[in-house]
Length: 563
Image (spheres, rainbow, N blue to C red):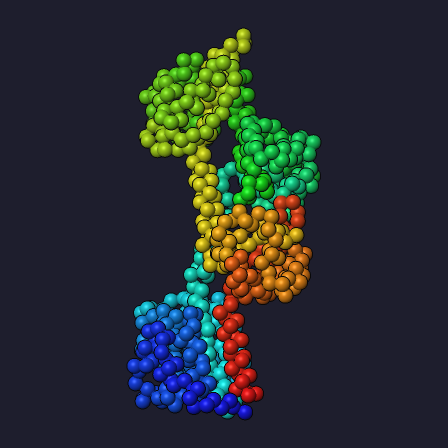
């Protein structure tokens, strides 16, 4: 039975089209005499209801009605049309979207058969600004029944997600580029996570150093057992505990580089750098360095025989220099002349060490030279130009050469070009900042929740949804504090499932600090924390408008079908 409204209570179409922004005005001014819909005064009540809902909504919506599915849309939908707007008003659906009809036509047919549908981030290539472009949308198609109960049209609520999808793709491409740089780095690199130092990433140079053993996902003490007795696991423990970096120069290490073979002694320069989270807690360790076995052997050989050393040093690709005790250049290796862009050694022989190091890095070099003259060893890094002006970053080791009486007779300086490594380090820093900026700018709530329900992190969009002005208020807070009471039991159960390793999606209501109630949809995945526990990483969006539209639609259909 249809609901019979008294005539005086039925709003006229003119009343329904009041307001509604620009599209409401256009619909009032439109000539409907040639349209299959006819004059608005004769439109059925079911169509009027959806037109009123559409024009007063703040989300992109359209209604398609009748055998030709005449197209009606609101202001928020107009930008999706591009240059088609405003000429699309009242035209048949298949004509309005002719260029994508092959893709959406089957969905339309399904809707007209009485089946509603929902799509998220669906790719729909379309022509709307004079050219074909890729666009992504999240939308629902809902059948509309007329007063006789027959499907007479369809209703759509849509959100264009092109910006979000492209941002996610850019972030993924950046991660892939960073991974490629990491793998191609000339130095060996590895990242371990948690107090047990589980290998998360290793590059090709690291694999070569350890004999191409499979270590990913394994604890360091299990993957490389020979390191335990040599004290390297204790060093990792100390860095993880204190948060202080450890730097090693020419430290000996025995590695089994050939499976089932004898351990081979190598010498390494490396740093263990702690990785911290936003709160400053250590979550892992980044290890990076070089195998300097050849360099160490060269230094030892130089002390034994200068002439023999000269032949060895000439084959090195590092810049190896010998200075007298006045700091003047006596020798430079062939590799050094190449990287320092020296064409004629005679032109620089006898020059002062200050010719190599000047400007802001001068104090580091002076201190290293003074240390060597006092009989000690020194190492530093810094930028300085070659003799032709090319700016490069260098890793420099300075050591004394002593005579039989133990007095310093000369100074040995070995410099390695680390410019490529510095570029990779800079790319790592910029990539991390970009990824955090993307999360900070996303309109959805991104949150990290511990197993006990405490909120560990939340982006600005999430704080705004919870009506929290000061992020410090999150400290020690439980996410259950803002979950509507009737949803808490379900939320707690789903949260436990996520922390046990499942990926889930569900809906619930939240109540902000100012009392605003919102209906949310969340997608949650498990995330292993540094201490081995599992947390809940969720992306949550406010679907209150969509939910109200769906409830309104159900109410209208129920009244029309059972009134």
